Length: 472
Image (tube, rainbow, N blue to C red):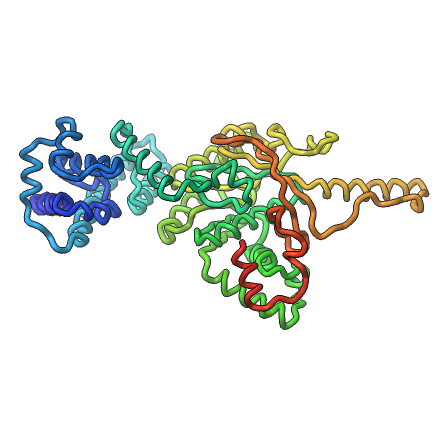
């Protein structure tokens, strides 16, 4: 114990001697990683001072500690011998802290195992979460967060935003300019629901978002319960390369398109995209898989689920309660892993009976809990889908009445269709309908300023292809 206390003292002394060392230490250690209470208090005050841009010196630390640190203790820390390899000492402190947490977990496991009222499944859930928290360096205790810590964390966050130059985005990009404006992106801990009726393009919209996020070099995890991973990748490559989806599916590619596709596959190979296409998924499995993925690939910044109603619940008490449990589980997991989770959702058929078929919150299928748990609810709407359907029904009716010759189509097939993203709930911002467009041949949703001319079917040289790729 004396050895680790001496190491802690030496690291804190190195910060007092050269405050620039703080950033290197803070990248690895939290106050809870220090064994000796005084050292924990000193590092907490250092973190607060750094967030407030105050000097990291003995007098400031004494003043701001509010009696938690005594003068003789600061003198003892400051008098410790200087160290050359602060990284090695920092790792020693972290290693000791992790072992203490594992010892606490072992004691907890023994205690729970002897408790006849706790099931083995509950014990495994507790242990798995604690191990995941320890591995992520994100062990959440049950204590309140005190005011100094809240102030320090908040100031650190606000200064980070200021250093970005007042950019709109505080989370990962949505891929759509106007949507970024009113949402600031998808932020850590957010549960985002994307709802639509069948054939509106929910999966294509999700992949368009994923493609934009991957371009920012943030990793994406997709849980596809309906579509195989191979089909998702074909869709992504069609969207990225601007090669017709039909041609990709058939392998009907000329030499120029093969070259174009090769550039796009080289781009995608470098991205951190992970797809789980198992057809059965419950909250426990999702939690376990995401925790493991996050440990192995910390750069994964968002998870997407296609779609919510295909997940299975842990209780056999009806679909509504099942979806409520899943919805709450997704929100809890988003907060635990500090990442946004997007879940696609089917809408009920009631909206088909309305003249205006644009979705509203009450159209969410199976449970009002989705509306309650979600931080953001987006509805996808394409009016052309209903116009085409109405033409088809009118033609069938006229043919049945023997008046097929009288049919005149009102819907005109077009490659680029207008689409709407209806922001029906936005916990931290305004609600609004945003105009975008859907390019059917490539199953790609786009910002409306991407015109037909910018995506012509003429053959492209290498530089032009790269420019298209870099625009997503």
